[in-house]
Figure 1 (cartoon, rainbow, N blue to C red):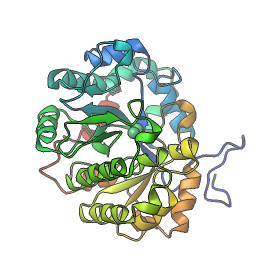
Figure 2 (tube, rainbow, N blue to C red):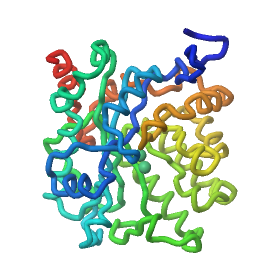
Figure 3 (tube, rainbow, N blue to C red):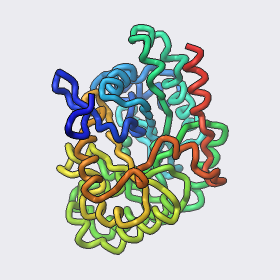
Length: 346
Ligand SMILES: [Zn+2]
Ligand SMILES: [Zn+2]
């Protein structure tokens, strides 16, 4: 029931996501325990669990409890043929590959894991209305690298694999042809985050947007975790990024995980102010890895967008995923319709 504020509240006093955005497209599932990681790595079917041991269904129950009607799960894909993959399975990073064949197997296994048909047995425990009310989408959070080789490998990887959408991300620092890669964590130390490194990070983000591959960009200033002072020095880069987002019709998320990690969202207020001045679409993401993170701090993000005067015309909607003009650069085969068909078959 709507209250005076724009939030939905229940008698229990629990805060629900604001009515404005009833979807989240950036949540994670599974691959956190060693067995899951290994199975995922070798492309075998596995039953994924989140960081807190929760199953997909637990995440979805929470999503429904928060009032979402569409919830999108993404798997990480960090493919780069120059990655040095540790021979120790305990050090595998979910979704990190240097071999096209293995990565392809992994992508298929990730899709299967969130396939309605496979979820059906455990869904039978849920209230009947549940499966009717929730659209589940499947996406990828893709680590982007500059350079033709990566692009070619990525096209090859995505061939005949249908995901509903792609989110662009940079969790690593890489050079301009994507051949040298360092993970911000755990490869780099605080003192490694020089101005030059920040510049490389932003160059990657710029090329990521210009690639036209992505529906929206994840945690656009992730570097803020290591260089909280970046906004004072990199005004030029922030403006260039804002221009590119507008030019390439690419949306940007307000990633609410930032509040827990660094006391402010990604992007931080200075960057957000610059982005708000352009004709860019915004969406809020919880980037949930656990049940307790589903829908977290959506109200704060709504408030922030409201203060910046970002109205309904500037908000990204789920429909934008399907309306986006066909782009020959985008290798994604939309699979929403097939998801819907599977639902009806339940
Ligand atoms: Zn991420
Ligand atoms: Zn994420």
